[in-house]
Image: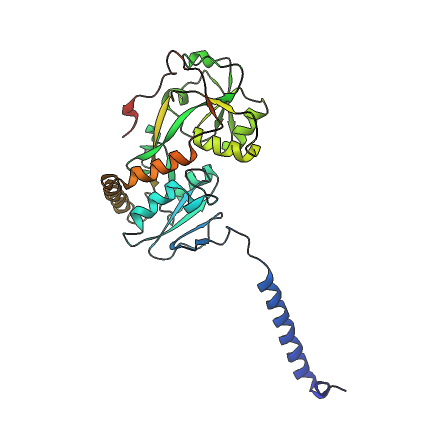
Length: 311
């Protein structure tokens, strides 16, 4: 008989409990963590983490938490360094002594995250007059991308004026700023989607005639959706507008005004050094559409927003 059999009953119970706890702990350690939900750290950049869920606890002191969306190729955890926009944050805030945390959310949740005082802001945002209402401290702009219309090859819509698009069903992402004349055109038939992927799927399924968006984003998503082997889309060119990106700093965040001033100062330095243009050029050269082909140039583009629309 085993010697352990002569242990007192209480001792045997304690020993069994300890063995059970040890077994449970081993099982727990073997369960892989769900990627992207508890905070992912770039192995080469300990000052930068990201997650796909908003943590309940506030970030530690010295860490700036920004809300964003998955919007490749500009910003996404699935592309190198989380993309061009994330690199702008690195260039400006990390040398100033901050660490960075990106939380990827659906766009509407990212916008409404400003209700949380632990969120420093959300990005990237396009300028619109509606943002000048106090809910957002808008940063200076930095180079972004184009806004245009995309459609399946074949019949080319009449883009001579926005009025000429009355007979078409146009896919639009809910909550996105596009360009002023289009956004204010209540006479157009706009079919709203929750995100760019849903909007693109509507176009491919024939549920809308054309969609509006950034061709770099839509080209990237199109290549992922179709496996890179399909009929290319067409894009209106010249573009109705080239957009700048902004950060919406949170007025409820402590020192939000100082952060905005710090960003402006850092942006000026990266622009003067040529680093800003270098980062933007790299994104454009890497992801400028190759599957999407240009449409015939119309006699004039549909009512592009004047330059004064930007601050």
